[in-house]
Length: 240
Image (cartoon, rainbow, N blue to C red; front, side, top):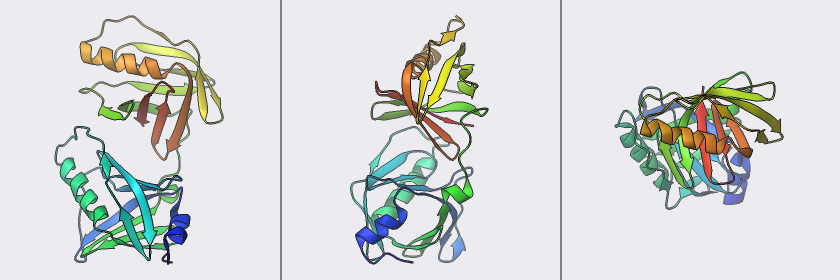
């Protein structure tokens, strides 16, 4: 099924996330960077949010007459590891800006531009949401307002939610405290930590983690990614 106008097309994909299953160039498989996958989220507010394994790009999107149209893609500026993930980001941005044709058949979305074809499948089929509780969530990305940055070095900060409590590590000190889930929020009580001295970059990570785990925080789970958003503007993205 291909949408015949913008409204019909957007209604078909609104609120859904699609993950790539295959990329081909001139009919031959084109391999993405190891351990990466293209993700396209059609947000309820009319944005397309795309990711190819490192930075996130977004733009208002229109799906008119079988064509996907984005304008002025805004992209985060995280350092990518390995660095050539930047090239993959640029490739996906160019593909999306080239107004690819799209086709949706049930849970399968196909985008085609020139000789390039990206086949995707609804994320709920590929990767059902992980449970908040009993999953060991490792801090992957730090959010400060409109800025997203990667965790410094090989530092391992993580959280585990269970029975109304959170335990884990700031990357330097152990932490624990109340964490009551209420709808789409988590109400954190006083968080206590051990008192080890931290290196400066790890101390900054600890400050952000503790700033987020304070009071009532919005949370969302998209497959294997947990996002925590504090009303003060700081946030965390965590993965297993």
